[in-house]
Image 1 (cartoon, rainbow, N blue to C red):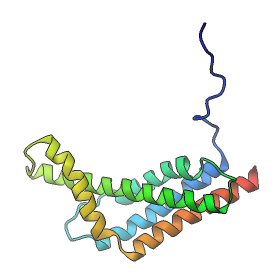
Image 2 (image 1 turned 90 degrees about the vertical axis):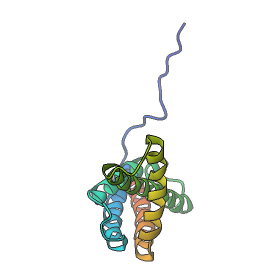
Image 3 (image 1 turned 60 degrees about the vertical axis):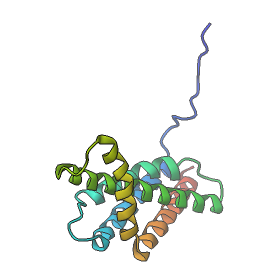
Image 4 (image 1 turned 60 degrees about the horizontal axis):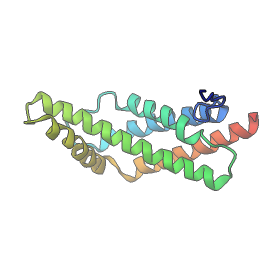
Length: 158
């Protein structure tokens, strides 16, 4: 006899908290990514960075910020900070991948494994150069505000 699963807790219905968290973090990612090219060295490939950061923000806002609303202010701030850190890491990996693709076109790598390892090195190098106080402030404040907005939306329409 087979077991029938009636309720899957991973696939819950969309909520206003998820929607507002996703839209807020997407806007935060877009605005933060618009500040980054001014801090990078000239000639760094950043084509499509703002839209990619907004896409990451949309996904992470939905999955991280909007996941468990209604748990208090401390958890709201915690979810916002977690989302900001995840957005920062994914954006750095994306920047590293862009630079790696640019270096592949120049024939710099001898093997695919060397290119993949260089994604992390390039991302960390560019992340260290790009992350200034204005970028970090925009990222973390925007993520916490997005989490607060999601919490407000959950309370308003719950």
